[in-house]
Length: 82
Image (tube, rainbow, N blue to C red; front, top):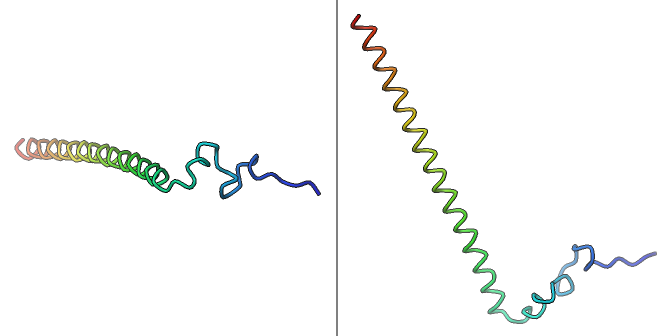
């Protein structure tokens, strides 16, 4: 039976699956925490940007709905007065 090398398959866990740079920092908790903090900050920035985009879209939809309703009211006034 052939032995399977998890490091080459990318499915391994623990120290053996880390790249050389990560392995050097494996015992340095401060570096790991900094790396995690940076990743969280990037995720947070993306989330904030997506919220801004959603808010812009919501405002456009609201404005379009208001415009549509005002046109409906204008047309109903015209047909009633005729």
